[in-house]
Length: 283
Image 1 (tube, rainbow, N blue to C red):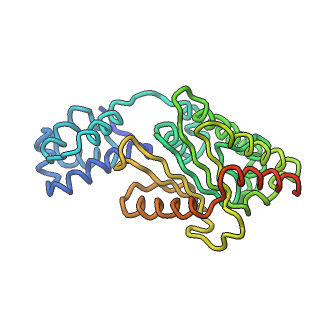
Image 2 (image 1 turned 135 degrees about the horizontal axis):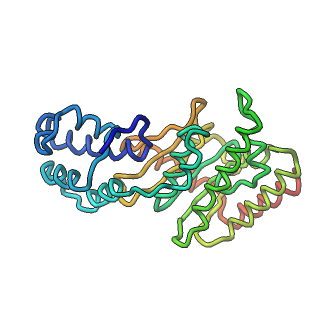
C-alpha cells in the first residue's frame, strides 16, 4: 500500500485513533511495529495517515493493545476498508481540501448538529444566499471560485436527501437571520426555505433569540458530527484559515456543553418557525 502526500481528515483521524490506542496501552512504536513486522517509521506514517492501515493490522494491534471496546475496533476497521470515492472527490484540486473534508465528515456521520451565528447553515442554504455568502469573503474570490464553492455546497445538501435518514439539528442565532446576504429578497427566500425545511421529519431548526443575551462560543460556527461510536465524534470549527477539526475528548466535552446550552436557550420548534416568518416579513 502506497503513501499519501495529503491524507484526508478521515484518514488522519484513523491513524490518530490507532496512536491514541497504542499510547493508552503503554506500547512503544518499536514494539507495535514489531508486531506487524514493519519498521517504526512505517508505523509512524500509518499513525499520521500518510500510509493506510489494513483491517487485519487494526485488529492485530487492537488485540495486543487489549482494547476492550469491540464496537470501536469494528468502526475503525470500517474506516480502513472504505475505499469508495465520494462525490466530493471531483472537487479535489479545485477547492481547498478542508471543504471536501467537511462533506466527507457529514456523509459518514450518524447525526449532525450545527450552531450558526452569522448565517444560516450551509446544508440549508439556497443557491442565491450561498453565492452572496461566498462573495462576502476576504480576500475576494474570483467568479469561478465562488461558483465552484456554490456548486459544492449545493451537492453537500444531498446528505439530507439520502434514503438512510440523517438526523440534523440546526441552532441558528436570531442575529444570523437578520443579516441580509444578497439583499432583502434573497434573505427572505432563504428564511422561508428554512421554515419549510424545519417541518421535515428528523430536521430540526431552533432559533436562539437575541433576548437570550450572551452565549458560549459567540462568533464561532460549530458543526458536531456524531460517529458510529462516541469515540469517533468530531467537531469542526470555522476559522479565518479554513475549517479546523478535532476529536480530542476534552474538546468534544466542551462543545457538547455548548450545544446543551443552546438547546436550553433556543426557542421551541414552533416558536422558532414563527420567528423565521416574522423576520422574513420584516426584512
